[in-house]
Length: 497
Image (cartoon, rainbow, N blue to C red; front, top):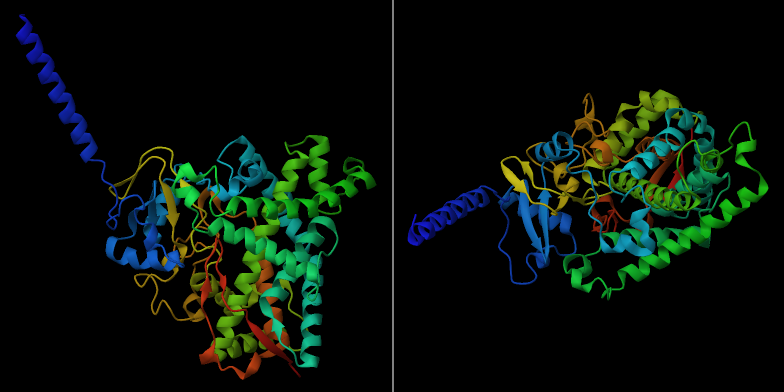
């Protein structure tokens, strides 16, 4: 074969390979999305309430949508069917978190059960949570603690009723949840409704949620990570340190007082965790216990109190729904008795109110961002390697293809419905789904029903300042979690027999 023939053969082979690669590349179909602008991509369309702006965009581009946020390719899921395909059929591919810059403060992402990738370390922490913190046996054993904390809440509300002063519903619920967790973990109360500590602790938790949910240019332009241009990582470092400074003395004091392994019966969760550490039955270091406490207190207090505040706000805005709930409680429990956890299964309308609140006001509007480590096929499109994936739970909860009158508060839609919040029904996934389902959801669900039922059963309510239900401000404040922008303040009126 002469030289020219060899060159022609090589050229033909190159053209063939190039065409094959081009064909393969063209079959890699990305989900549709809006046009981008140089450098910034689609960053400016997010706005102050990205859960709303992306819901509107999805109406045009569909339930699987591609955005370019600076240098970060992002895929947004906005329908129950698409969420099911990703989180159930492709659970492993979508199970790892997108490590945002804010969570790298104090190397938090390397120890947190929320942010760790699926690994032996993560599985061990999840096992500890499921077996020793949120197991059915432990939750049943701690019913008395929850009831005591709710009684403290009712006592505080009763004093406000006698003085004819308003209750800050969100703050009161936060303090109750904080004391429930601290009593369960440490056998002490960390706050009371009027304490400066409780308010400051709430501000620290809120600052963490805002830092984790804020549009951070360091996430979208990696070159900026070193300089932390918005100071988010510095603020997060301070917030994490404040929480660790609170928990560390409690652990040290417990270690000095007794050896958990010497006790035949653990008194609280801290005893259990320290016992695991000393007996080496499972792998957990003291440093991991600290970060686990940060996870559980940050997530547990903020989401539960915010959801209860939204539920009360919707009931005060819809007095006929509040009256219906009150009537169910009176008929089922009576006036003299207090609400018990065992009553919840006999209160379908109360359960429906909680579900409807989760639908309209999910505590986390986007499930904690995921990241895929290889191309994943989803409904005929390719979610590309290293893309950030956002599941817009807020959009799913207001999808008119699923829900009639999606923007109306109608608990009745759940009466007789089999839909639950345990990650099986993708129309309603406030706690996520798949292997990343929130481990604390069993406790949160118990507390929400107990607190809300008790507040409805024991009191009538009127808005502070003579505001009518129609005048209520229902604006949202976006962060990693979604809280009510204007605090709900309502005056309790003690119910007489």
